[in-house]
Length: 317
Ligand SMILES: [Zn+2]
Image (tube, rainbow, N blue to C red; front, side, top):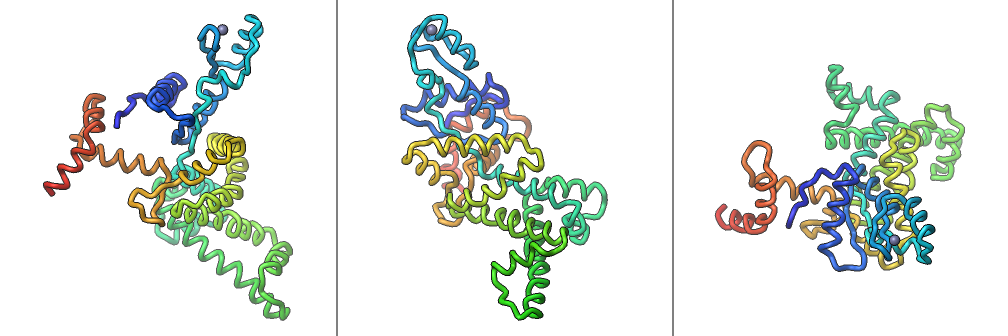
């Protein structure tokens, strides 16, 4: 394992990353896992970087390349000249989950989460601000779980009581018909619970089981929140990913669907996004380094030897 020592937040450094990965692989398609900002930047590079097959000159804007072809009077297929045309970007599902959780907190903080947080012990203004911004993802997840359970009971209790009085069947069709006739506040909470929170829970289940259909179905519901709450990075990310999946050949799409989430241990219910797998590997690497900011040289040395170091430490401890 050889790290590429650049910060992937600019076109220049991402070019280095993509060039290094492409140079090392001899496959028709190269799948690369990417999070929020690097994903958007890489997608734009895939669309806009061209190399002229005649003079080998590179271009970073589509317009420049088209002008160049016209000037030189070349008859070539533009799509085939894309520098990174074989790269497939896979978004990190772990980060998508974090951002979905943040989106739900944004949507429901004032109406109900704030009161719940106070009940659960986040009392001081500082604690509440930290809770509102989901600084602890695991605690935020627990809060949403509690919220889902309690809202479900509260909302259904009113419905079941109504059915009892009207001698109606408490089924799903009647539930939706009933919800439509309720005050706005009920309708809002109903949508939050049975559209967004339910989709949020199913997304997690889908990720754990590596079930793409669950993930896709949930994201169809949740990705609308990115637009309503103006989360531009993830708006862009999910739209580009869906577009890529829609255009991918059948076998490539199937490969991506099966590799969105993977299980490190091999256990079928312990799958997670590639980004989280990388984070746990990073943590492991850091555990073999002395305290303080690691130098590039030390970082490279540990990455290159991590497998041996692990074997040695397993034998000793
Ligand atoms: Zn040329």
